[in-house]
Amino acid sequence: MFVINLLQAFFTPISEDEAYYWLWSQQLDWGYFDHPPMVAWWISIGYEFFQNELGVRMLTVFFNSFSVYFLWKILHPITQNQIKLFFGIIGSLLVFQVFGFLTTPDAPLLFFTIFYLFSLKKFLEDNSNKASLLLAISLAGLMYSKYHGILLILFSLLPIFKIWWRNPKFYLVVLGSLILYLPHFIWLFQNDFIPVRYHFLERSADEHFEFRKLFNYLGIYFLGAAPFLSYFIWKSIVELKSKNPFEKSIFWLCILPGIFFFFSIFKDNVQPQWLLISFIPTGLMIYFRYRNQENLKWIWNLSWIGIFVVLVLRILLVLPGISPFEKNQNFAESVENFTPERAVFEKYQEASVYKFYNPERTVAVHRTLGNRKSQFTLWNVEEALFGKEVTYISPWVKSEDSFVGFKNRDYFLKKIPDYQPFDGMEIQTVEVLNTQKGEEINLEIEIINHQNHAVSMGGNSDFQLNINYYKDLQYEIEYKVQIPLDELKLDAGASKKLKIRFKNIDQTGEFKACLGLNYRPIGTSYLSKPIRVWVE
Image 1 (cartoon, helix red, strand yellow):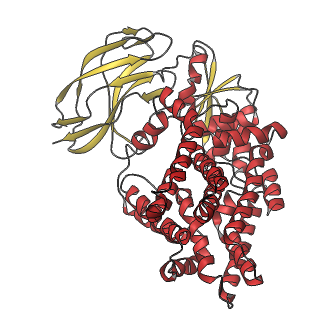
Image 2: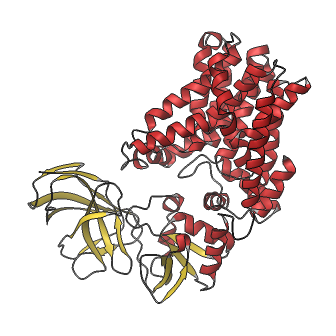
Image 3: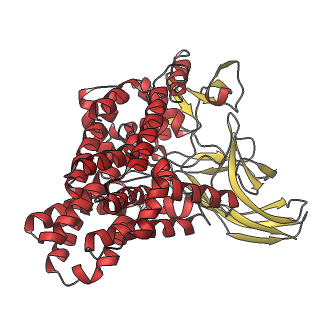
């Protein structure tokens, strides 16, 4: 498994997310916009040895092997049947295949999930100082990997509440883990809890329930762990009755995350890797249920079929012309053919991929319409490009130079001689508007300049205030209006309250609207939170 993952890590082109996290590793910190810092630390160590895809993935490959080791120590297979069952389960669990070489926050989460379960089992069995120390380290490791770790901790401890709540050592374990996690708490405080605000408020601000999300989620939950063994997974969960505290905890880890994320579909689109903390326990449940059974022909045969299918898919990931990741390297090479000294992209994934393959280049991200914030926002990379010539690369802003990029779309490269960033601008206003169609709306707003330079807007300037109406996706605009504004100069750190007037949409219904600035060389960027507009 180690050798296969190592070869896969070397020959598979970089993914968009990996390039993004590699960028984090170039500026190590105690936290980042989207996630805690463990993934950046892993990449940083590996990249010291190899400045390529293998370096990004090296620690993932090593720790995936350690994951198998700790899972072995948890289950203690002894007989030939148990050993075959163990490796059949390992080979069938998709998270072991995907995060055996891809380096995203889920890779350290996979390792620390298993390391935590190993430590919890030892703590429940012997309550020793060594087990307490391992449990404290694993708790901190989970939370440094991904915030989902808190769900694993809560859902594994709730079913065995009566065992640990009177144990003084458990509280020392929690105290030790909090001390280890303190640097990240400090970072969160210093950065206004930006990951928390992003995940709980901004990420799903425009999401709503769709039956598509329900069907997707049911498929992920019931089939996502090990598709070919799904029948035996759920048969094990239904049939296995155990009074063993650890096995009881594992049982509820199969169920409770599923219930939690079920309610998430009413606001968000659940991604398969979110259920990683449940998928590992489902593999353990199969082992607990069938470890003493002799006739395992169906499980073995289905495991081998699953392993064969996954191996074929993994081979396809490295084949030129077939690998879905090859497009990233092609994109970076196509951009570099134009040798842009300072490249500004519309999306953080594009900027990250280009920077990975061209680390000497300067890159930044200028968000337009519905593109989300990222670590580039936190770093405020655009500010360093103020007044300089940049090359803006996007499928939407037309120019003479172009190449075929992602999704076979034409990407255009436009030179902007005097670049004026404004991502640090903010517009505050009401959250809800009850209106009549076609009426004139009077609205009070406040414009705040958080940047280090002044911005002029309105009049004959390059920046014009506007408002865009949409229903679901921010870039699918139903109605837009440019708002008349006398030229206004806003100094760095200054704010200004204004009363604006504009004509309402001439349709009835429920809409969302965002205020933004239209930058003449590029287009519109939203600077306000979505306003819910009810039109009668």
